[in-house]
Each structure stands twice: as structure tokens, then as C-alpha cells.
Image 1 (tube, rainbow, N blue to C red):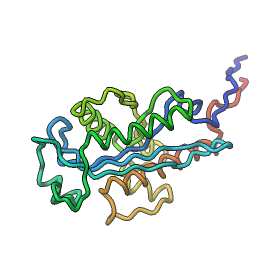
Image 2 (image 1 turned 45 degrees about the vertical axis):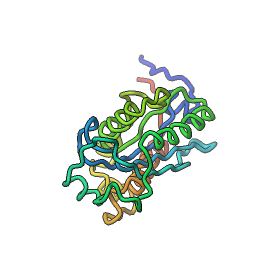
Image 3 (image 1 turned 60 degrees about the vertical axis):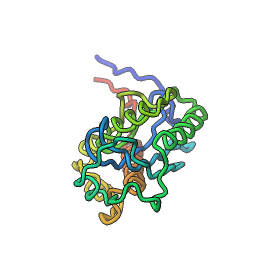
Image 4 (image 1 turned 90 degrees about the vertical axis):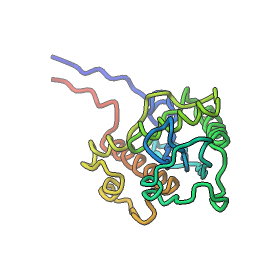
Length: 219
């Protein structure tokens, strides 16, 4: 006789559902693949909230166009890919990367505290890429109060590969029933919105299937 013992846990709060982490969806647009040398050009952050019944929803959004840091490398192919062909144009309304991160970090710390979470965790599609650029920019700006865990992430590419059989953001969204406009893709704002929608759907679908912990079984 074997009994799988489980502990009754209230998963209807962010802090309990994500083990004390406060999930924040992030997307960046950059001028290359090297976080140390290539410019961060755009960043968006979307915070999440959980209702009283434990369903996950998007909450607040911050979006910034970013001025390339001094001496930053700008790869032509990357600019053509994301459509930011004039990164120094005043029409972009871009701000310094340090100021953008200060504003994002301030919002996160406030909402993280309200949710009684210990630390923020990045949710992103191919998250290591976005995390590397955010961390490099924070280091350049000498920001010591970085709310994000330095290496732990929730990667929607891996999660959607597991749950939906798709790892490309557009295909994963379509598989999840989320409309996706390729003409709007590769904008940090649009990609973050779709990534946030995708993450919420996957988390909420898991809840409809019984969630965690599983019921005790007897064999």
C-alpha cells in the first residue's frame, strides 16, 4: 500500500503559485545578439495579477524606446529585422536605458511588495536572451536594486513546446487560440502583450486540468 502525501496549498495568490516569485513578462528589441556590446533599443514590461479564484491575468504595462548607449554596436541585419532603422532619431521618443530600467524596476518593486513576493522572475520567450540584455543594461547604469533573479526565468518557448507543441511565439499563440499579427511582431510592446497572453493561458489551462498539487492516490 502506497499513499502519495500532499499538502493542502492555496495556489490562488501569486506568491504561493510561483513559490514567492513575482512574474513579470519582458521583451526587448536589440541591435544584435551580444548583450555586452550591442544596443538595447526597446523594452516592455507587463506585470501580472491573480484574481480571487486563482486565474492569472495581465495587469500593468510599461514600454520604452531606448537610446543606444555610448559606443554601442549596431548590427545592420538586426535593425532591418526589428524595423528600427534610425535608432538615434528624435521621433522615436527614446530615453536612456538606465532611466527606462529605473521606471520598470520601481513599478515591479511596488507591485511585488503588494503581492507579498520575495523577488521578481522574468517571463519571456527565449528568456535567456532578454535577461542577458536587461542585466547588462542594469550593470551599465549601475543599478543596484535590480528586482529580478539573476538567472532563474520562466521561458514561454520551453513551456509552449511542452504544452502546445510549438516553440515559435507566433505559432504557439495560434495554437493557444491567440490572434497573432506578423506585421506587428518584433515590436517589444506587441511581443510582450502576446507573450503575456500566452503565459496566462498556459497557467490557467493547467489550473483547469487540476493544477498542483495532484490529489492523493492510493495504490
